[in-house]
Image 1 (cartoon, helix red, strand yellow):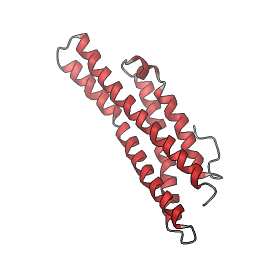
Image 2: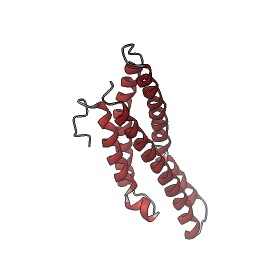
Image 3: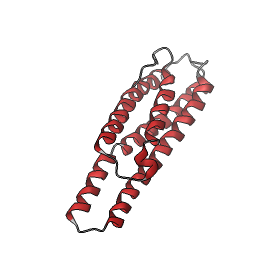
Length: 156
């Protein structure tokens, strides 16, 4: 999944993660508001875990760069803003990763109660809609971080 050598430019990970999240956004279950099959859920979960793993590497980079006494104060302030946005991005990923438990609860509710198909459809529409919104928030955060990267990449 992460085939690009992002070690040369660690901030390149944001573009890689953005591409992977965009692939999740385009999963047919999200666009059609249908129940997400287990195979797609596993793929989504694996993608999220890979993204978080790679983003954690960048967290360490921020700590090191912010504490670098040779960088100008303006650059350090930009890095601090980026670090806060990066932490928010990780929180968004953690929120998104709750999708499997929400789907499981939706299944439990639909099977333990006598619900008509319209209500069951609404349950899964609600789940898909909430997680599509989180994906859009993640995409927005990644785009903001990429804008910051353009400002600081030649300064660090």
